[in-house]
Image (cartoon, rainbow, N blue to C red; front, side, top):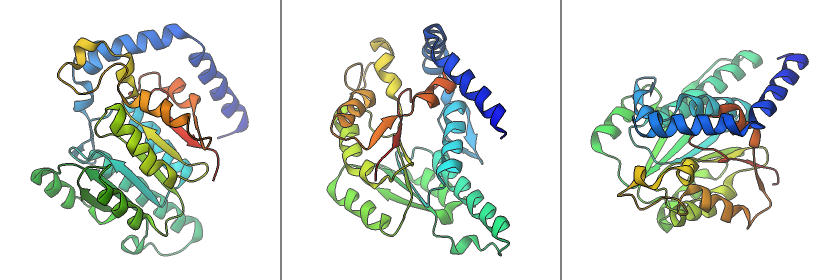
Length: 259
């Protein structure tokens, strides 16, 4: 990307982010169509349902390409599409490096991988993930993401990895997300990211999230801001949600600025 175009993009993002009416209209659409119409259920990545907005899928792709992690940790597996997205991006990083270095590509020898956590991995979802061409890059751990034995298993598996990117998308209560942040955000190094999904819950009318243990005042965004008060290692990357506008992770893209 040439510098003139990069500057134009930055100015455009700033213009979008400075207009509160754009966010209001985006939120209105998300409430009416995104939440009311189960819009995020309509998409897949390489054949598996991903249950994410396309905008957030693109943002994750951009960050993985930018950060070039050797390990991605995801809480919440569901049907597996997000794991496949991360794994496929890691495969592309390996391919690109092989081309740039003019070396042979042996993906089965790559150390890059994705660790996915879920309190329940349903058999048909596990089978679909394990049958996928990207499965060799994926390690699944069943159990609560905040259970001590699961946290220890992840930390053990993460040893030796230099660049870790974390995505939190499981139980959306304040208590749970705060515990996830305390457990996994410290694994993220400088210039990488911890993404906190579904911060939009705090802006969602209560009647749309009835029969859920989370809601306004008790959700990923409230947990995220409490966590940010306890550390100076992370800042909200405002430019990401400003350019996306339609995102479940408004203010949830946390950039690590200190080792």
